[in-house]
Amino acid sequence: MDRRLIWFLVLLAPVLAWSAVNPHDRLTWWLEVFPVLIGVPLILAVQKRFPLSSLLLVLVWCHAVILIVGGHYTYALVPAGEWAREWFGWTRNNYDKLGHFAQGFVPAILARELLLRTSPLRNRGDGRPSRWTGFLVVCVCLGFSGFYELLEWWTALASGAAADAFLGTQGYIWDTQSDMAWALGAAILAVVTLAKVHDRSMAKIMGK
Image 1 (cartoon, rainbow, N blue to C red):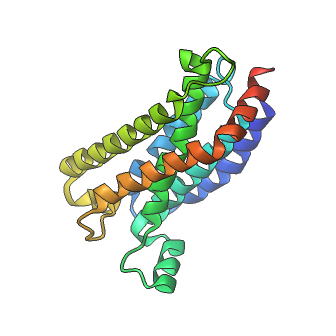
Image 2: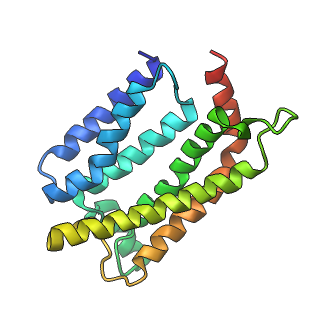
């Protein structure tokens, strides 16, 4: 197995194990951690055919930790978010906004990697990626964020009051819209700030 993946798993497994012990709400834990339980095995399954760049692996690990911590406490009760709420005088725990920031930032690099390694966007004729890449990546991330909000809505309809902790609106009527705005802004930030770093990271993996 790729040494990078070994470190990925070694550093993630203890966090996941901690999170699974006496979470605040077991249903919320499953709902929040489910993407990790699906995504990590998928990364392992495709590692030989499609090894991820080191940059993307680091970002996926960070996103997974955010989800796992949120699953343990529920997003509305994460201690770091409570500390920030008291320090800045906020009216709510904004840890969920960190989660939605990651939901835009990390998938942006994932979408960019998939597009540049598997589609005609990888080369516009002069060896450089198509100018459309950034725009399409942001569109993918905004679409994914919107779809995730629909999933949250469907979950709430299916499980009733048990989904309150999963939704984490905390009485904020614009929660859905602000979640998508955070994801959108994060996707744009990722494309603007990490494009060159990401290109170098992909070049190393594709050169193997």
